Image (tube, rainbow, N blue to C red; front, top):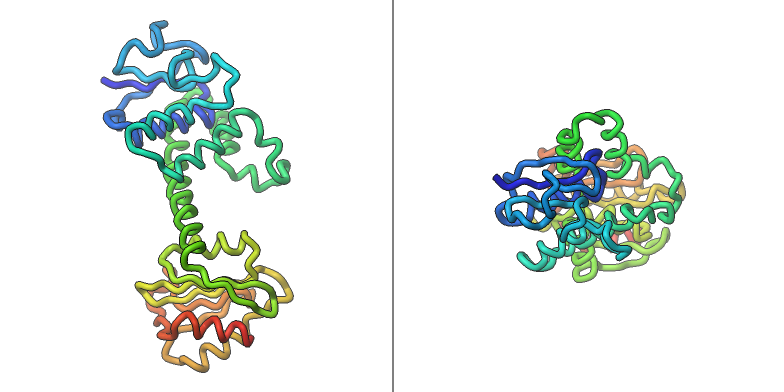
Length: 275
């Protein structure tokens, strides 16, 4: 039976390497896991002699990096093999880039590194799991792999959102600053646009017809007049003004009974420009 081997107390790099191998390397999906003291191999054998055994982040083999000072990590090495087999994957490439920074302790240079929000990240969660489940590395790996499934999906959405904004985004001016509108099924464009500094973001779902209008959470921005204009002009559609007055929603996964607007995105942009 195929076996993936890593060190006890698996960290971000080790867990990501296992996840990459079991998720993307052909034939390793059902591989068993084994744990050894850091730097060693299973049974003391050479790390790459047995094609049924894959050592990651330990053993000084092809998927370990501790034998050199190269700016790489086990996850990057495993991804290199995946890239050979399946071709490049933009989402994976960015994930392993972050893992490599963390593995080389460069998270201390991240923006505002002592902020509490970093303690919600994968690295901090793994550190917590290692304290809670210190005698159960399988549990730690399982939790980490589930988290990475979600992280990968969000990176895919981010890469897609960047492409949608670049190719389909319509920029416009508002009294609060730059706005952007895009027709896409990918809701990540809203979050990404706000992080890019757009004051107002419009997303229209081309399949369901739903609209989302979201503004930066600034006291100076009030979308209530826009909400009143839109709901008066199209009373058959369902419009919802968030209590913050920074969101006008027409359709939501949280309320499938909402009736979509029939107005094209260009008309919505014009209404926002006049607001």
